[in-house]
Image (cartoon, rainbow, N blue to C red; front, side, top):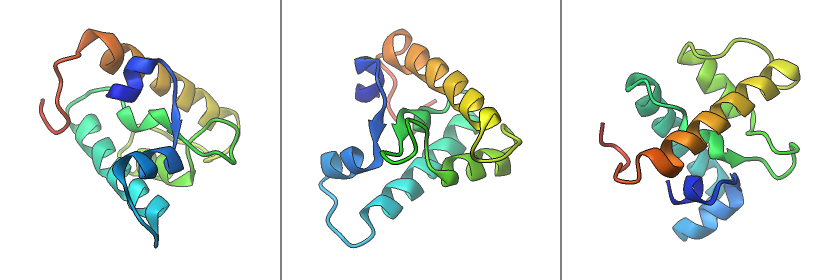
Length: 112
């Protein structure tokens, strides 16, 4: 949520560094945590906070796991690359920035 208040996305590596994660599999562990947050957000009908985390190598969108998880959760359909993915991510990113960035500064992860 602190990242949402900056108004910009961050990378998986930056999240791993902030959390002080050490190798091996730091990015994988970040991805698993973000998918868990996605489950909570979708179940609570909130914007997907995980949309703020993007891949450094994919030009500003999340990795495949984000889109695969969104498909499993029933909130996205389409290929994990291409225009559908970019549009879905852009919408979720804007929703998350608005929701978590300013309207709900009192929210705590895991709380409804």
